[in-house]
Length: 328
Picture (cartoon, helix red, strand yellow):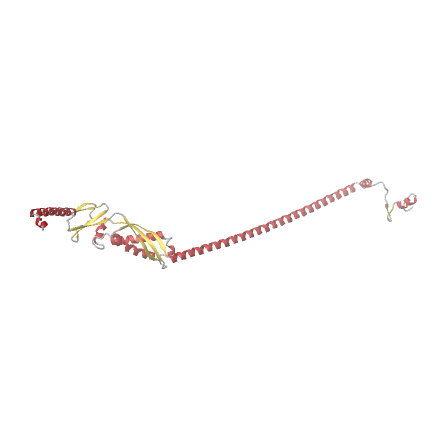
């Protein structure tokens, strides 16, 4: 009771003073908020548009810099216009041979000046700045269409051409629909199905086995050809040796025949010379007989009855008598 009796309520002057101070604080905060909401800054990589109570007030995109607007009534929509990139991963496509392929597609794009307001207020919801979502479906659709015309086996071989075709198709569609400029489009990843990879590996193995078998056949054929060549060379060598031996024998026979012919010619010439000498000089015979006489009388002489003994040499030697000429 003593505490309550001693309590004294604050005076009206003090309460009114505190309320007045709080009012000034709220007023100052409101003024600062109004001032902060009365301007905006567009960054160098951006462009902007202004709506007033839902109505677009800008006819041209606002460039980078400081701009003013009516607080609470006007709203600012900004859009990045510098070169940007984004990527779509795990995009599943199907080829002409009904093979499933997962790819990744990356694009590099830029929003030109004349496409800013269109993207802000004509595409999707008002002020929509999600460019990636706007063009992602276009990229997926065009990519599916082009891959549906390709054979899975040739995708790796024709990868650059496929990327170029997708870039042309996407660039044309995105430009017509959204005004966005596509600078580049890449397909950084291609993942084939497990069944296709297994079939390719089996085909590669079969091809390698075929190549190995063909190499073996070629090696055996080469070895056989080498043996044939060796046998042929040996046979030719034997033939050449036989021909050389035959030629040598022929040459030797010809040489022997020539020698005989020369000897016969020499003998004939000698006989002819002797005959001519005898014909020209009869005493040559006597000279020849004298040269060949050994000192013994002849055993026989020529007579009218033929050849008769000249001396009976055997009888003379036995009797010791002088030999008597035949016919006496």
